Image: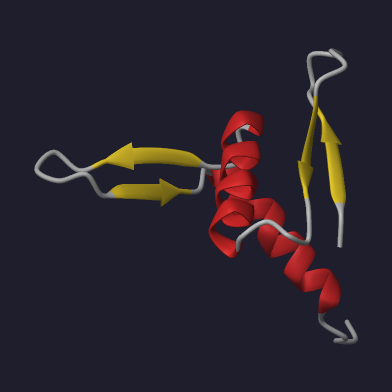
Length: 75
């Protein structure tokens, strides 16, 4: 599995996820891209180095919409 994503600024820099990358590397890449795109926010706790990922309201609405499209319910 290979995935190439171009930066939004139109430059020719290309980031890649390769099948040989570690699972942790893939997860960090995905989180970094979601954060850059504004789909998630990160917060740090005052007394530790833990990073909390929060979803803005518009992200929750989009996820709910996509989930509802996968459900085969007649209305």
